[in-house]
Length: 198
Image (cartoon, rainbow, N blue to C red; front, side, top):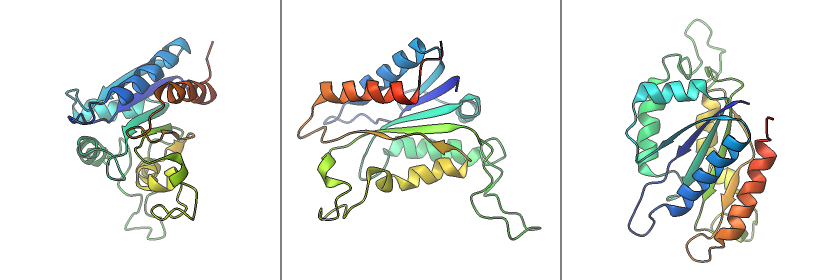
């Protein structure tokens, strides 16, 4: 991997201005720069254009999505981004439609991705505590992992032929935050995923 495209999907609210996601984005960009990677970044507060964002995905060897978990998914502004960028990218730049053809009905849905070889990594911030996942005795998630929760996002990237890197998550960030410990863990995670190139 040489080129990494970082997306900060945080949408600022009065109760959640986005400092943690901005800090995690900055740490990733600093690590990547020190490691010899080329970087591009888009935040949902930026003005962006569909064609530039599609080109950013095509340019990238890896996409790092930094996002809070809002109502079990990504914020609305990033969903809007996906609805435009990813839909227009179905013209062959990100995928060739859904992969099926009328001439070959055996072709499977979701196999038209043109970003094969491109990796992606999710970095999530959640209000839910770590203990609420991977435990079937927990009533709400009933044994789901954080990757199970974000299965739709994994499928979106798989639709383009992309392959996952290990997910990172900061848990309990509103009611019981331990920001310094999270930042330390994130730096170690980045070191394991994006090794220095020189």
